[in-house]
Amino acid sequence: MDFKKGSKFPCPVDGCGHTSPVHDTQERVWRHVNFFQYPCYIHARVPRVNCSDHKVRLVNVPWARPGSGFTLLFEGLALMLAQDMPVATAAEHVGEHDTRLWRLIKHWISEARKKLDFSDVEAVGIDETSKRGHNYLSVFVDLMKRRVMFVTEGKDAGTVTKFVKEFEEKNGSAEAVKVVSTDMSLAFKKGVSSCFPNACHVLDHFHVVKLVNDAVDAVRRRESKEEPVLKRTRYLWLKNFDNLTEKQQGRLTPLSKRHLKTARAYRMRLQLQDIYTHTDADLAQDEMKKLIRWMKLSRIEEMRRVGKTLQENLSGILAYWQHKFSNALLEGMNSIIQNIKRRARGFRNQEYFATMIYFVCGGLDIASLCPYPRMKGSIEVC
Image (cartoon, rainbow, N blue to C red; front, side, top):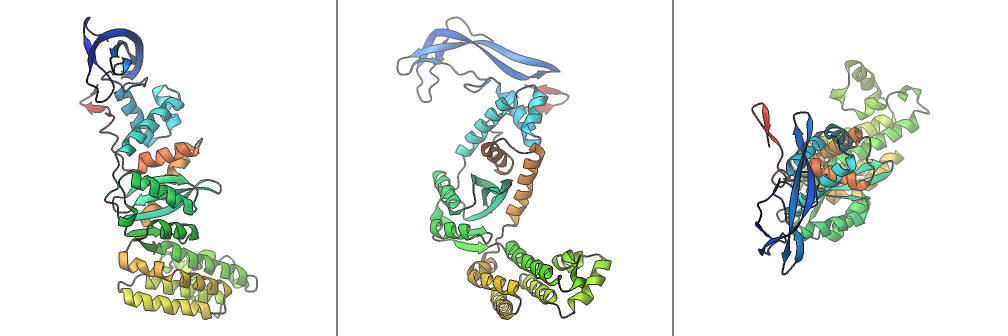
């Protein structure tokens, strides 16, 4: 690639508009998409102009972004591959080191995120996902548009503060958020109450049911030491009755009718699940209060503790019937996020992991910024 002798070029600084003759040139090379099975490179003498305001500057070329060693179409191809496979595998396919691909992926994710507008966000979901071992990332999701807005390390109240800072930088308003859905984490509860003054804090009902499920299992484990009949019955008590096999149902039915603490705890769990089927908020409130009273007055220590926890979080639990939001979307996204981690067999650092979460779950419009190669007929049009 070359230019005509005597050509003039504009200053590459945005908004300058000053046109100058060529000061000198630099030899540059860019990797392009393959020509059939052969690597393809673009070579060019890139002119530099001497702008009166910005001194000597290298002009921009139309086929690549400034500072990149790849053409835009090659970067688009790399992005398409990286969205569906580990970056290391994508790098092997295109014959480049994965560090170079990570650099271009992070660039386009960053550019796409700069264009995000959170001004209409009114419902936020917060959940944590494991990064490695007991290290966690907190994920903040727009529950209406079903997209990840922010990812940060940790799962304490400070993560909510970090999110609000990023949220407001992208035109979001913490005062305008009406609903925040979380699990029963005290850290999230503290962060939500301090950062979202006008939001209704909804406690995710799946986590409420899980809390009771865990208590039922704890009762079974303790009681099984005295009641051998309870051994190897864990999933009989934790699964829904309809999800059990006919044989398992035949085992559970007589056990549930016996005078066992586990059976009573199991009936409390069933009562909770039945409450969540109600559509009437007042009826649900009355039934929930009765259940909490039953738990607190029972002689089963694990269920008494759960009843106390439910009492302390009653307003957040009952808010579910007012807004009908939950973390079901986040649980689905968490499955996708864990799949991203598994297929890559882990990430070198937290930044790479967060980048891929944004890439796959962030709802980013990268295609409008970086042109993906498009197929027409049997040949690739470049």
